[in-house]
Image (cartoon, rainbow, N blue to C red; front, side, top):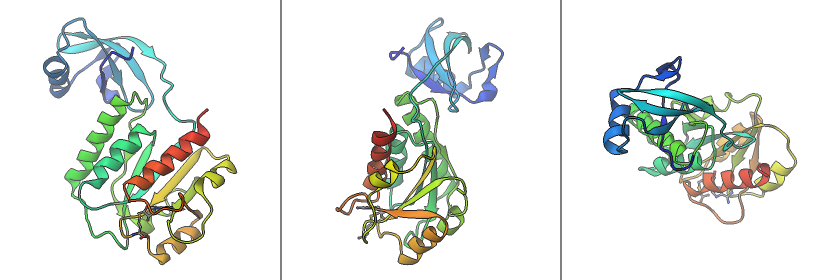
Length: 236
Ligand code: SAH
């Protein structure tokens, strides 16, 4: 199955055993991927379901539902302060490859950037492409950017960690080994780091401050390290 191309579709495009393709999807399948009538591909709804489909005219027929087992056993949300420039594109792409299910971009005391709505669309497209590429069953949800303090109260039932490179905090690895929750939030700061007040506020909201090791990582590297640690511990 690995040779088959994958495209993400909206659930509403599936009507009985047909997939109603958008003109963009048809263009992609036919002009870009060079699929012909009768060729097979995989349609994924980004919410856990895959279907084996066959191109039939301007639409597709579903042949069968498929089982996908590429998701992590824990649902990880990345709460991440927007880095400068296009750094967030890399965060979205790589954290999708590593299995994140939700990305919550936040503005913090040391982020000045106020992202445009076009950025959100771009990040969602990057997440979709990365999920297709990594054979994910789920396309991560990218939330609208909100202020850090607003985001803090969104994850009541989660096990929550805030990564802080300075201070004597326990290592994330150690903390993960002691916890059994299935829902995890990891907060990563911007290039300038979190302010002390932000870390305190997070802790008051049930976050545990953790370290990712003794070196200071770049804002783009830290989420990758955190996600790699989680999958190393939670995935057998
Ligand atoms: N300029 C800041 C570093 C910011 S790094 C300073 O000098 O302290 C960007 C973010 O990555 C941090 O806010 C933190 O969330 C995360 N981070 C980087 N290195 C880390 C480490 N060793 N442990 C935990 N978090 C780290």
